[in-house]
View 1 (cartoon, rainbow over the protein chains, first blue to last red):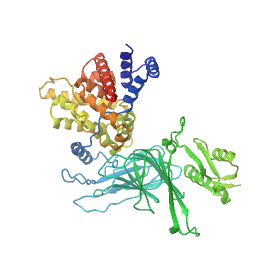
View 2: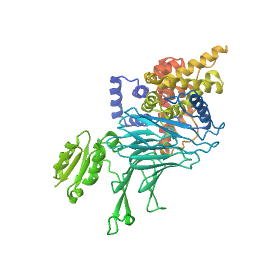
View 3: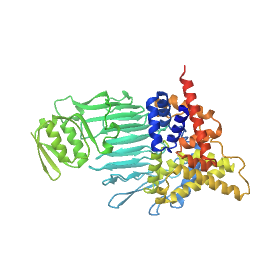
View 4: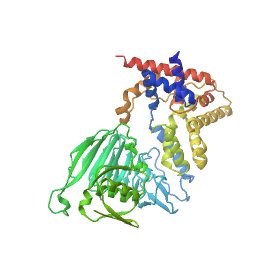
Length: 372
Length: 187
């Protein structure tokens, strides 16, 4: 019977044990029969079992963790302090972190917090030099991480949340015990995949807004140099509070983007107190056949801009290529461009932009001058 | 965290090359329930199973770069757990009487993950319901293959049954799921 054959092949596909011919046969069946397709899609998408994060696992884990720590398994240079807390009071933890950059310089961050000894947390700022590729993580409870221009990094926070940081960004976090939440401070751009913990809300603070995370995956772009900040939500739900409109909470649903701009109210540009944030929530258009998955744009080194002011495009280019761009005339900054660039060089990109709205430019080492 | 092959490989890399403790912790939590439950089927004692699990995980850490040589970590963990538990049984002169038939760790309780609730709540709940209804062996085979990404052959080895029998269980499981999901949507 056809149904039996379909079931057999579906099983083989789930078990990743399907031959090419069988795969073609299955695809054919899926095309012709909507019921088959439905079952196939329902099953292939999901992981069934629940991940239980219970106290028992926690206790067993700490038994292993401290044993390994005492045996020196977690430190590269063999030198560490360990403070074993009371049984079951494994809230406070002494952690060492070791970071290596391409120049093989070791930076150590030590943070100490215990119930028994009131210690002051010592935090050293960490520099990631050209951190393309390496995945770095820390079990320190307080940390600062910075990416230089031209480099990105990907890390995992002590609570399991994953963060991808774009160039020229700074992230600080404070997950100290006794906190009622997990707070990070971001200047720059990062993509967050937040680990679920109902008891400890995950909060991100930028210059213009703070975000309380209820869902999991979203992008935040908040460079101080740009006068615009935005966050795009992909999965879940987030609550955003603007810095200069405290108490007002905006909720974003998936595929919504919040853009916060500065509009200058006073005549005097330099008076920052008169800058008010205006904001709008846009629904993202995800066009069919859009081969550039919005979710992965800058993480895949792709830069996409949509009717964007040249000044802001230039800021992104500066950060990505680690160059400096000067505009000879103010009005050029307002030119608008749309496009997608990937592996092109900065020269190719400037050529490409100039085709759509002409400008002249001169490149001298790492500096670019743009004129009409 | 989800148990996809990609996530597992990523964790392996982070543990083996970057010596990342946080990833090691994630891996530990990811497999804890299932491997312990599996072991308890053999040696009957939860404490013993926990001890063996911790030894196993320690050994994983100590492998360092060799950890990357393991292609299917799930299979490795189940197989190692099985062997160690059997050895322990042997040393205490006991024998494994009952075949390994059940995986008790699939929680009856509803998911608290807000992401899951928003996207696939009903479907996941239904899938978990029907899996709970399955006879033990069928349930076990299905979960090992679907969520732990064991191949038919690997599952056969772990459970000491033939690949044909595995195929049979898998087909029965899929048919049961299909019927259940259909019946749920017929309102």
